[in-house]
Image (cartoon, rainbow, N blue to C red; front, side):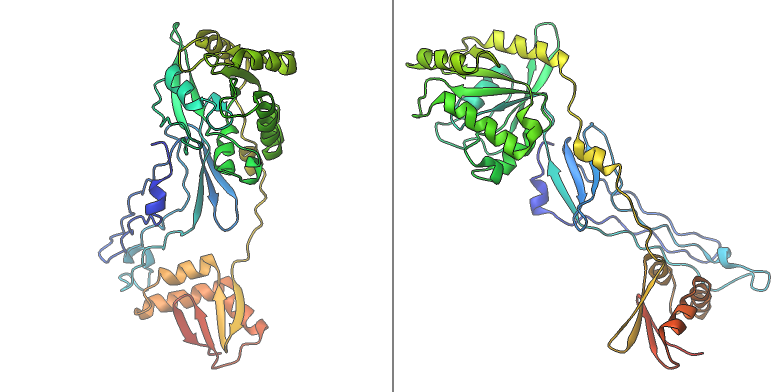
Length: 371
C-alpha cells in the first residue's frame, strides 16, 4: 500500500454495532474492530480541530481514532434486593464518530529533486527497481516513486523521486505542495540538474531557484544535506556548464557528473550517498513532537440551552446514558431520571429558569418537566 488514492472513492468507514444486553443474565457482545489500512508515513489529523492524532512511521503501527461503545449490560446488573429480576436491560453504547484528515509524507532516506525533465525518473529507474513513467514533457511524474538501492555489501537505502519542482512551488505552483511535503522526511537530497541545458535552461540558475523554493516552503529543508548530480553529461554543452557549476557551488557541495541515460558516473554518486547516510541521523517529525504537548481542556459534563421554547441538555456522558436506555421500558426510564438527578441536571435546569410544564430534550429523549 503506497498511496491514499482509495480514500477518494470511499470516505465513510463504519465498524459493526455491538449487541444489546438481554435477559437471563446475558451481556451484549462487543463488536469486532474495523481496521483501515494506510501507507507508512501517513499523518492522521482530526478534521475539525486540526489536532495531530498519529504519525504512522512504522510498519504495523496502529492508532485508535474512534472508539466503539461497550456492549449493553444484561438485566442481572440492575438487580437489587427488592427487585431480583428486573425487566430492563441496557442498550449498547454508541461508538465515536469523527472526520479525519489523512496526509501522506513518504518515508525515504534520499529524495531526488530538481526541475522537470532534469532526468530524475530515469535516474531512479537505473539505480533501483522503481518503474516510474518516463517521457519527455514536464510533470511526467505526478506522484513520487519509491525505489530501493542495494549495495554490494548487502546494505540498502530507500530513494524517492520527488516530481519536478518549478519556481513558485512553495506557494503551490505546478504541483508544489503535493511534491514538497514528501521531501520533509528525507535525510539527504540528490539535486539532479540538466547540465546540458537541453530545455534551454541554465543549470546554475535552476539549482539556486530550487533551493530557494525548499527554504521558502520549510526553512529546515534549505539546510538539508545535498549532493549535486550533474546529469546529461553525454550531451553537448554539458562540460562547459559543469565547469560553471563547480565554480559556483563546488566549495559548498559535492558535484558528481553523471549520465542516467548511459549509466556513466553512477557508482561514485551512489557509494558516496550510502556513506553520507551512515553519518546523517533520521529526521524527527516536528509535528509529532508538537502533538505530545497539546493541552486538553476539561469539558463540562453537560450544557443547557433554550431553543424555540425547548430546553436542550447536551453532553457526551448524558447523551450516552440516553442512547443506552430503552425508552419504552418504564424501569429503564426511572433509572435514567435518577441518573439525571445525581448528575445535577435537575438543579441546573432550575437555576436556568425552567418552569413546570416546559419541555426538556436530551438526545432523543423528550419529556415534560414536573416539580
